[in-house]
Length: 320
Image (cartoon, rainbow, N blue to C red; front, side, top):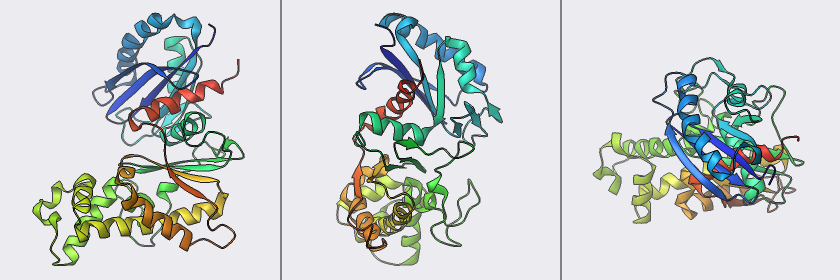
C-alpha cells in the first residue's frame, strides 16, 4: 500500500483545484476552494488543510501518500517558490513547497501551471511515450511546456518555456500585463480572439452577427458561436488567429524539433476552426526538413482535470 497515491494542487488566480490521484491518473477525490478570497498564503493553507487532511484520512492516511505536486503561476521548480505572480494576492516570493511540506509533512514539488500540464500530458495523455513535444495552453493567456529528450526544459533559473510571451509581430498589439508589443499571447489567447474580433468590426462595415453584441461583451465563446453559424467576420478571426499561431509554432518546431505539438485549453474547443489554419500556416513556414513531420494534436486530458493530473505527475518523479 506504500506510496499508492499522489496529491495534485492547481493554484489559479481565482480558484484552486486539488485532488488525490492514483498511478493510473484516476482521481479518487477532487475539491476546489477560492484563491482570490485569501489575502495571505497562511489563511489559504489553513482552508486547504482543513479540507484535504480529512480526505487523506478517508483514503487510508498519510502513509500511502507519496507526496504533493503543485502547479502555480510563476512557480519555480528549482526553488519551490512562487515568484512575483501578477494574478495572486500574495506578493513577492512565496516559499510554497516548503510551506506545504511543513503543513502536511509530505514531500512537495512545485512548477508553473503550463509545465505541470506538459508533465501530465506525458504521463496520462496524448504525449505518452513521447520524449520530445511542446505543450501549448490556449486559455485566457498562452502558456507552454517544452519536453526535449524526455526532460522538461526548465532553464538555469526555472523559468524557461515562456513561449506565449515571444514577440511574433514586431510593434504589434500591446499586452497590458507585460508591456510587450506583439506577443503571441496578445493574439492566440481567448482574450486575443475577442480583441481581434473587435478590431475586425472597427475596420469594416461588413455585416456580422457580432454586431448584435456590445463590444465590451464580446468574448471568444461569442466569436465561436457566430463562426459556427457561418458568420464571415467571425470565421476570419479564426483564420487570422490560426495564421499567427501557426507562424509561431513553426518557429518553435525549428527550435526543438518536437515529435508533436499538443494544444490544450478553452480555445481548442473551436476544433477545426482553429486547427486547420494553424496547421496550414505552421507547415507553410517550416523548412523542408521539418515539414509534415510534426504532429499537431489536441490534448487528451479533460480540461477540468488536466492541471490536477499534471501537478500530481510531479510526485512520481520524486526520489524515494
